[in-house]
Image: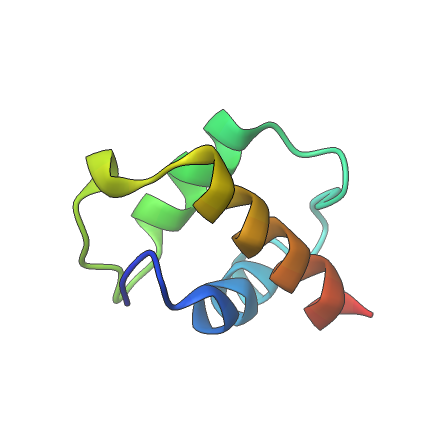
Length: 64
């Protein structure tokens, strides 16, 4: 997975952190969780607030 794979990341985050409050999540935590996902293979420095926000929105949609 890469930073642009927002839906795949959201699904993996839901599986790994099903009890997390994904609405009130700090981007620093989200960044760390994405980087720790199995199959994530992108440069951690390529992340941005816009990318993290897109991942968070996809995760919220996935949970609903």
